[in-house]
Every structure is written in C-alpha cells, then in structure tokens.
Image (tube, rainbow, N blue to C red; front, side, top):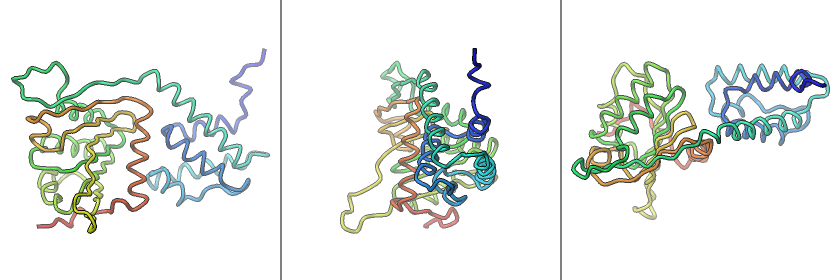
Length: 268
C-alpha cells in the first residue's frame, strides 16, 4: 500500500510549510497571483507585500521560500497556484467545523437581557487577539476609553497590528491620541473623506475583527452610549468567512476609498 504522506512531492510539502501562517483568504490571493502569471514568472516582493498585507520581514521570508520551491524540476507558477488553492480550500473545510455565532447587545442593566454585552465582548475579543485587529467605526469617543486602552495593550505587549478605519478621522484623532497610552506603538489610521456632492454619505459600518477569524458586527458606535447605555444589537461571528471582512477593509485601503491619516496630524 502506498503511504499518501510519503508519496507527496517534496516541493508541495515545502510549500505547505512556507504558507502555514497564511489565512485561507491570503492563500487564495496568493494562488490567484501565481495562476495569473507566466509559467516562469513569480509575483514580485512588492506584489506579495501589497496583496497579502504582510510585514517586510514576513514577505522577505516567504519570497525566499517560494523562490526555492520554484527551483524544483518542472514546477510552474500554475502548479503552485493550484496547490495553494487546494490548501486554501482545505483550510476552510477544517475551520468550518469551529464556526460559532453569538448574539451580543448593549442595553440598560435594568432590562436584564440574557446575552453577552457589547463592551464585554469587545474586550474579550481584543484580549484574545494575537496577530491583527481591524476596527471600522463611524465615531470613536472618550466613552470608548476602556476598549481603546485594551487595544493599546494588545499592540504594546503582544505586538498585535492595529488598524483603525473611520469616518472623517482627522476630526477624531485628537480624542484617540488622548486615550492611547504614550508607551504603546501607534495604530495605523485610515479615514473616509467627506463627499462634496452629498454631505450625508459616510462610512457608517461598525466592525471589530480579530486575527481574521472572529468579528463583531454591531449597530453600536465606539462610544460610551454605544458600548454601555443604548439599545444596540450585534452578532459575534467565529468563521473562516470573517476573512472576507478583512479583504473588504483591505480593498478600501488599496482602492483609495479611505486615506491614511498620520498619527501626529491631530486636528485641534
């Protein structure tokens, strides 16, 4: 009987090891990059870093591994793309078994609602994050101090990458900086600009996404009333599908729908 493990070509095993830290969404993006290229033309370092949103160090390591794999006899970019797509699908199948959905709410304590609170859920998610946090919101106010401080701890202590995307963030940056501890590295800030043709157009979504695997989608703003006193409803989702939300956030950045705001550029 043939051992299916030992019969796997060595370059495929090497490829699986090289990309083991990538999410299913990143694997699919990488697969598409290879399958679009000529047989002997791998994606460039710049392409990989931009498309996968990796650090410079991680990108350099991945590029070295992929170049080495391309030296295997008769291996083409198309072959690598097919294997990457297969790995992405396998990742989704495995993680699908762990999918969970939980109702979350903000409500006055006197109502005694028997579900997790918005604030407790956000803090729990941030404390569990190990790689990356995306926050998309309409407003960020002084009332979100407890949450912002937890996010700063994740950034400082565990090196979690933090990206804040909001509406007209240049007008909220002074408040955010006042809440952010000075000893924590700054987050990345992006803003959706006002539309001169329609003042009502805005980025109005409220999302907290951690490690591309768990997300809170809520009606609550990141404010005191949104997190503690209003009546707000949301759902916490643990699923491979959460990676699609990260792709959406990254697409807004890549397509220029939101623009980078310098942390030091607070508007008084």
